[in-house]
Image 1 (cartoon, helix red, strand yellow):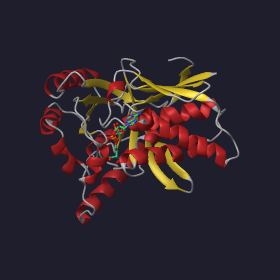
Image 2: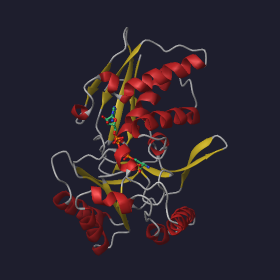
Image 3: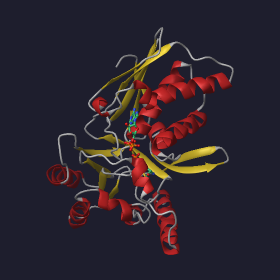
Image 4: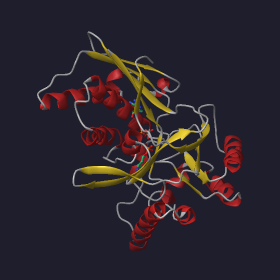
Length: 317
Ligand SMILES: Nc1ncnc2c1ncn2[C@@H]1O[C@H](COP(=O)(O)OP(=O)(O)O)[C@@H](O)[C@H]1O
Ligand SMILES: N[C@@H](CCOP(=O)(O)O)C(=O)O
């Protein structure tokens, strides 16, 4: 038996919802941007890594987050009186590490969903999401679901963490294009979290509440201009923008060209620019490729929200 699971790229925060809002994305050209994990029957456990960013992962397979996923899933099965089957795992690492694109979350989600499918869906989605958050927290320093939830469930996800519900989807604007540009350098999520203040001024917390509530309201009431206007980050961007070379230039270009919004994807260095015109998205993509991307590792995709989330794509990588 063998199963391959694909998990899509995701953006935490979406400017307005630090740690509580996130979205999954799919490039409009059909590129499958995300990690794939194969779980297959084998006499002894092993982890193999392939893919364009496999060389950026720790050399020791036990340092790969897949190993923690395997151990944690085995423990969870045993907590419910079940045993893990003999298996091995193969990771196709397509997302750069430390990119702000939910790279570690993507591997966690693909691995745990692969293990769950391999065990005939032993656990339901909320149970799996809790495990995914725990594993992501292990790597980034604290539990936050804004990558694992959209990556797993798809769409624009709002974290609720209330009455056993971790996250639910909110409506998104189907005609928005999100131009995602990864410059090719890395920023550690744990470090980008450590530079944030422990406390915020009252005016910032009021702005945060108003922006997030207003964005969610405008998404439900189908007011795209108001929603876009409220996509502002008073929590992380003021501190993290300085870590991203060229961030101010992208902001200037986005504003001058009439983009709806612009911000940091996750903890950066990836940035996103939003527009509702495909020609504008294409011009932004060209500009970002020329002016923001720093090396051959970088890339820029015109994306829309991926409503499907993580899915089984076959049996062989
Ligand atoms: N499968 C994996 N995918 C991504 N990162 C991994 C994986 N396994 C281990 N790691 C390690 O986890 C850390 C992830 O860093 P982080 O800044 O959280 O990345 P990201 O923000 O892209 O998720 C890195 O130190 C990386 O070497
Ligand atoms: N809410 C988190 C999101 C981190 O996303 P990543 O893709 O950079 O891991 C944060 O902003 O710290």
